Image 1: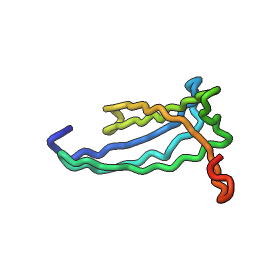
Image 2: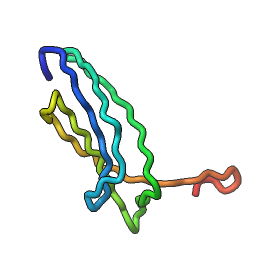
Image 3: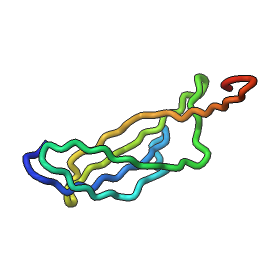
Length: 94
């Protein structure tokens, strides 16, 4: 937290379980007032992602980097998996 307004640049990238980058966001510049909390929404598209299953629990990492000017002030990694499902009115979920 800071006691003054900050101009931050937020960038995100998705890493596969081998650490290879498979997607990235545009860099977003945001202005944050002192003590302010903000939400930032990003959308990513992964081509042919490896799905998380019990047999093959593929985990990706969302790496978020926060910069002020050229200085990195935070890097945070969020693990996640991707699942797929279908719903049929007669058969239910599959």
